[in-house]
View 1 (tube, rainbow, N blue to C red):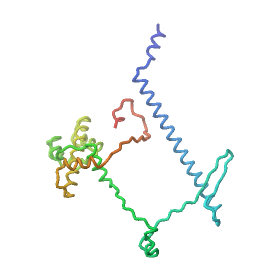
View 2 (cartoon, one colour):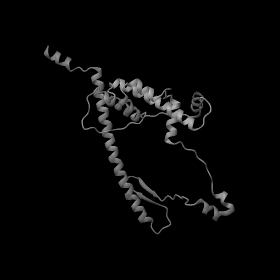
View 3 (cartoon, rainbow, N blue to C red):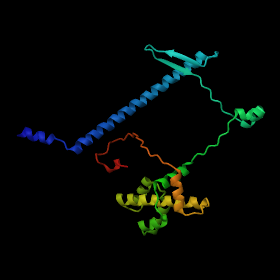
View 4 (cartoon, helix red, strand yellow):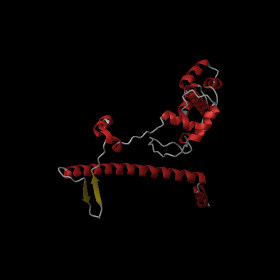
Length: 242
């Protein structure tokens, strides 16, 4: 009877099994990342070795590559690559004269700044709420001193704003999360309105939003990272979910 009871006590719930599986996956991922880091370090060393060897072997020759064979039909090929970068296209044009257009190709490229990416991305994804930050802060607290602090500190960065709301305004985790989310969207709206005004936009904000949404595409992806903590948090810790 005691043996049967002991067996029953050892039976784990699906949640416990899933938690153990998660830990195993994290440990495996951490181990592979460590192995990958060591492998990369060794590869860089070997690459440097072959590059130095090739520089010495190709010295005073017209050859552009060196080949080194291993014992298993594998080889390393080191090729000298040349990248031509103009210092002054004006001088090059002067030298080439009339044939310059045959040798020089002009291209105009437009790249988005980080601020532009933020603006277009948040409009495309609808990460904004019409409103005023000052009014939002007044709804959070009636304390004028805290209002002044929040007006300076809230920047639309969710995690940091949430932490500030908890420390400065004394909000609970859930309250701070809700208000930080709303504040970020209100700040985004203000950013959009400011840009449109500065650019001299004559139409409505809604018209600008429609044009932007039809002009860009935003691809979302996932990035997996690894951080080493001194002590692993308990399973189910809310801090794990960010």
